[in-house]
Amino acid sequence: MGLMTAQEYRDSLNDGRIVYYKGRKIENVATDPDLMACVETVAVDYLMAHDPKYKDLALVYDEELGENISRYNHVPKNGEDLLKHLELIIKATELGDGYIPLAHDIGADAMNAISITARTMGDAGKVYLERIENYRTYLKKTDKCVVAGVTDVKGDRKLRPSDAGQAHPDFHVRVVDKNDEGVIVRGAKVHITGAAYCNEFFAIPCRAMSGPEDAPYAIAFAIPANTKGIRQIVRPFHGRISDMEFPLESPLRRMHTDSLIIFDDVFVPWDRVFLCGEWKMAATMVYNFALMHRRTGCAYRIPLSEQLLGVAVAIADYNGVSDAPHVREKITELVIYLETLSALSRSACLDFVNHAGIPVPNPITTNIAKYHFAHNYHKVCEIIQDLAGGLLVTAPTYKDWQNPETQEDIKKYLQGKASVPTEDRLRMFDLIRRITSADLETICLHGEGSPFAERMTIFMEARKIIGRCKGIAEGLAGIKK
Ligand SMILES: Cc1cc2nc3c(=O)[nH]c(=O)nc-3n(C[C@H](O)[C@H](O)[C@H](O)COP(=O)(O)OP(=O)(O)OC[C@H]3O[C@@H](n4cnc5c(N)ncnc54)[C@H](O)[C@@H]3O)c2cc1C
Image 1 (cartoon, rainbow, N blue to C red):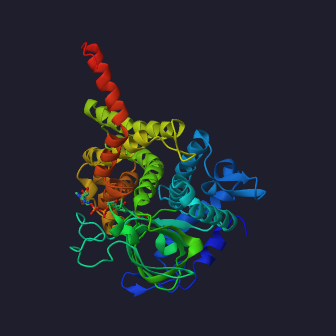
Image 2 (tube, rainbow, N blue to C red):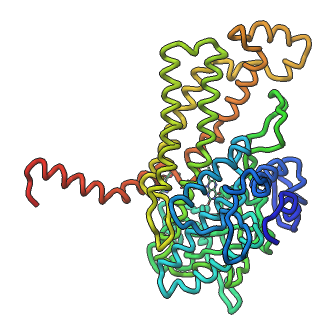
Image 3 (cartoon, rainbow, N blue to C red):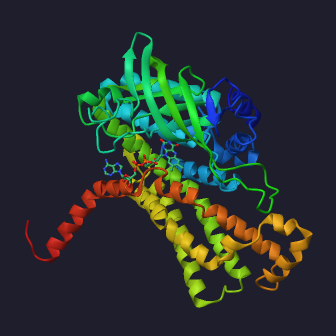
């Protein structure tokens, strides 16, 4: 089959999957008026792969298959590969107007994390390594859209998956039975972005397991979205342009939906099982997924940060205050925010480390980059909201603009700087409201892991640096060790 076209991707979604959305069961996600806007966002990845302009970025020639494959399905060999992977996600997000295509990127992070885990296991991992690399070949040949279900519903966060204090044993996906053909799994994953309109998803543990009692929860697999026993309840994302806002001519796209995926005694054949009971290895898998996915998250947020800087500069100009010293100071803050994220994300690729023979982005730099944009995002929004002024929330709507009885008043009284039409100023307020919304604030904070998870990783990974610096200080103080 080779590289999928955007139309083949749309057609592939009409497969009998069970998806509930806004209180009703959806017949075909690709034609549902709401969900099709998300499908079109994913389709950007497929359009890009067939556009000669992006060939070098989006495709890699695979020697074994003798054909071009998606770069996402290629095992990175060096820092340059990691950097191109980053640039591909940045470009795809730009082409999606800041909406993330995600047909392959999250799936690739899970696939590489599984491969690293199997390699780390030595002989015990050989069977898993063969299965995951066979699965990779299948993806190279079919170009399916695959997302990752990592986050379990978890129940009481302080308790282990198997702890008797949990209200029931199914808060983390677990194996409830096994036979010669495969395993039966039960549980639920939550917040799974794009699951409603992917072809398949990975399910991998979301935490380290601390003893043999948790072995049934150490389970990783890949499964088609229409498999018997799987149902999804989908949360809409409010990234949509409402009829109260100025309309745009750009293609129909929107941010993604996130699914609660229920695995109701689902059969998974052995060739799709990549970890089963090796509880000590769950930590390796989730750690490597988080590392690679935080790099992916940074790539998503570089175009967003450019948009944030752009709206701040534009609205300050439209309000006529660009030259005020405090405004220049605030714009400088936003430049530092963007350039720090961009430089750290790119240098993390070039300053890579090897995990079981696969180059991965530098763990400390990646976590600092991700922490930087999450931790400072609210501050950035505060600056933009400050520069925009109160009209951001009190301006009349597009409906009032359309009304001939009110348009002239709005035009006359809501103009800022003389050279900027009032409509442009109002359009900019619409955009600011969309890109500083509470939904985006939450995804910037929690997407790819909560800020505390990044700080913990930074501290853990920096132990060598901390020890070395202590040695420097002791040497300078004349302390002999
Ligand atoms: C929009 C969005 C999209 C997402 N997409 C995906 C996706 O595609 N795939 C996927 O797998 N996941 C996805 N996630 C999940 C994301 O990785 C999680 O939200 C994140 O890991 C935090 O987990 P949580 O939401 O369960 O919060 P919680 O774990 O409940 O965290 C809430 C707070 O409790 C604290 N806390 C949690 N556990 C403990 C503990 N044991 N001890 C002390 N403090 C604790 C945390 O530090 C945090 O402050 C997405 C999240 C969002 C918001």
